[in-house]
Image (tube, rainbow, N blue to C red; front, side, top):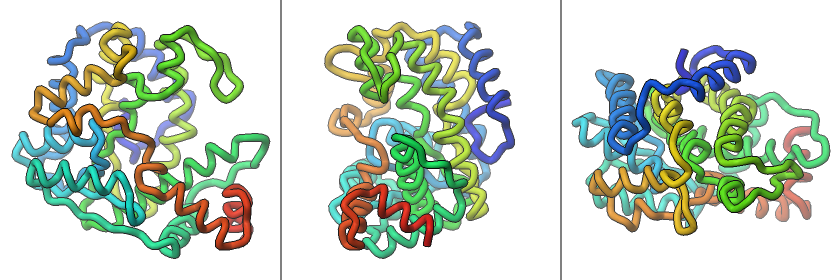
Amino acid sequence: MTLSSFSQDISKVDWDEHIDYLINNHKIIPTKKNLYLSLKRKISEKTEGVNFGVLLSGGVDSSIIAKICKDLGREFRCFCVGISGSKDIFHARKVSDYFSLDLVVKEYSLGEVELLLKEVIDVLPIPAIEEDNYIEYIVKLTVSAVNLGSMRLGSEELFLSGIGAEELFAGYERHSKAVKGGGTWRGMRIGDLKDESISGLKRMYNLVFERDKLISSHISKSLLAPYLADDVIIQAMNMGNYQKIDSLSNKKILRNIALDLGIPKEFSNRKKKGAQYGSGFDKAILKLAKENGFKFKKRYIESLMSG
């Protein structure tokens, strides 16, 4: 079993058991070279003879994927969406221009974002909104709208995503807190870095796996996450903290791989926010809420869910 393909059927129990198996597997020494080779091997195996695209945000994770594909001599297009002024579109264009990548971009209007949200609401299961879990649901909706809006632009059958890199290589604020002595995150106590990565990987089933499977199957596409390849997870979970994060930078090993691949510091060191922010879709939802007479995004989303 592999976790990197969101087109497969897997239960939450199987997901958790597989994660536990991988974190206790020490078959690969976690070095920069071995990590790069694992990513390259996964991408090479899954893209040979396939009409595929890369979801390019201009961050280090997706830039590495695109550069590996280019170095492999693959023919592919990159895709990036957002609203006018989107930071992801700005940086994706810069990366694409630098490496002469074929980039497809679409700037969505507020009305088009609303249509994407309505479609996503019809595809994803609607949770029981309790306390603060609506925040997670809004993130699901927003990122799903970004993915749907991107994948729909092309005829490609497979799309490569950088999902998983943040959890594995200490990309989130709670990871930084973990190495600084802990604290809390959404009311939960933060453990050490490895514990946070494990719990984060397991939470991905509800937050990411189900979401991306439903969205990709909705439009008869497949989504692949090379960073969730078994060999990559094994290495990430056996790395020392110093290989991932320090007081100056997170995802250190990925940023160093990017530099080795010839990706300039401007791109490899970019501090990127989540797709909901980089695309500007989160901002669009707030504008749509106000235009429809709602003070909070939650109320606007609830109106779409009931409408």
